[in-house]
Length: 57
Image 1 (cartoon, rainbow, N blue to C red):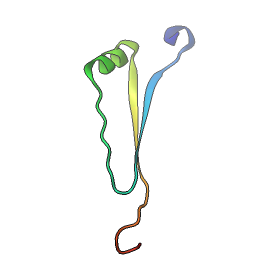
Image 2 (spheres, rainbow, N blue to C red):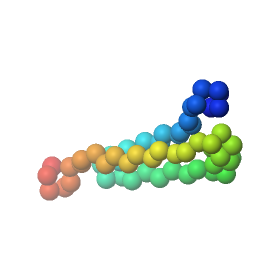
Image 3 (tube, helix red, strand yellow):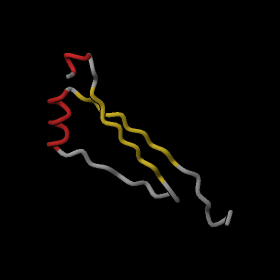
Image 4 (cartoon, one colour):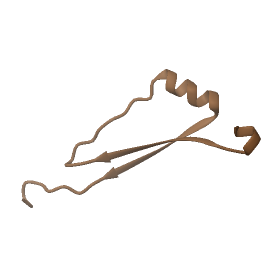
């Protein structure tokens, strides 16, 4: 389909940080190998939401 229709493959990953917690993520070898097989790339977005600290209630 990529060749026939001139498509590109992309995996979009959105990491949302709430209340000061910073989650992680892991791309294991099968996922990376699959992405390579289909010629995909990864688009990773990090979003830090504001949070109240002890001083601001």
